[in-house]
Length: 212
View 1: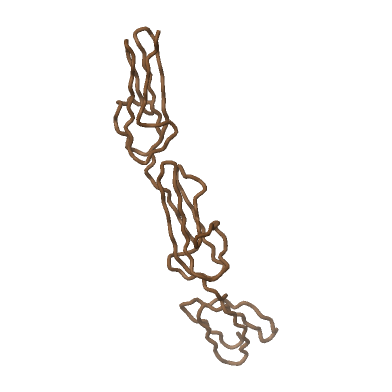
View 2: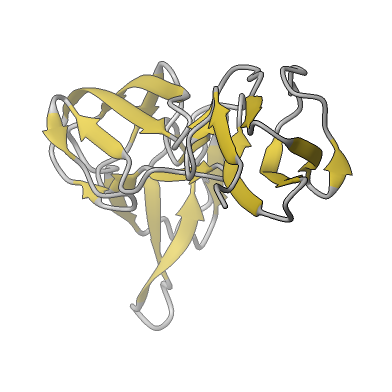
């Protein structure tokens, strides 16, 4: 009247692994009659390495000559892929304007949340505008349930002065050239109203002719 005993070792239920695993199934009974061991409903030979990322359920059923039975199952996963960290809004070595914001995205099938983001050593929330000039180091770190870890670091600076603004009225024939990413406001000489003419890129000039 004693039921068979099933022992599964090499994996733990609810655990994710970042390496291959080789579960073993031991069946104990004085009058063992038969058994059935499956991995995701496919026949499995005890001790066979499992190397492919995925979710698994290892099940074993055993019975003896007296009709006593035992069943045991363990669910686990293999995940050898580290989280993917994407940072936009700032670039390595970039020089950015006041108000720049970094956006951090992390993807992983079994991500541990929350991930860690710091700006110059202090916690930083993705999308927060940077309003002080200086040199910055942004670090993002993420891990998953299998223990895979990823990190990304971006070094950049924020320029301390806002873009210069020029207000000009050139009503006589002539040209004006403004360089270095300046914001230009033009005056209509007929109405006297000011309006934004445009922005000048750092790699080009803006020329205003006559009634600009």
